[in-house]
Image (cartoon, rainbow, N blue to C red):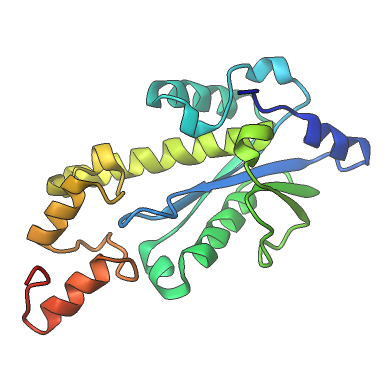
Length: 214
């Protein structure tokens, strides 16, 4: 698989849009934990970021090392998050947009244009282009995906120390067999998404004094 490039950024720079930010988020699918987004503005120096690729194709150690490089060499970077409460109140897509906007607001430069992974986002608040599979094609989006993934993984590992039964240090809040078994036995924590199955179902049955397994 080809590594992501700066070709889309360079095309935008050529039109006079000098500050182009890549944005990505992680954590839409898990049963627990926030959505975390990152925004990254890169210089036109591909060689300084050799080895960056879609965060899903990297090991945890590779992502950690890449995150250090990005923070040191990017023009600017920022992180943003949306809480479980916001996910339950607004739905996960709208919460993801909130996290992206917060990440963009953390940049020390004001982006002229944004490249975002996925589909167009009506409420992003910035002129942008959506690129399906952007984290595998666009270097600034790939950098953002790495920072967001590292930040969220660290957060879920920290939360795992408070709720060891759920093994969040390994599953990061996703619906693994171990996570579901712990949820069935112990019930949801304040960090579980009540709007997601099966968390909401368990709470519904508990509210009427029934066991969801019967």
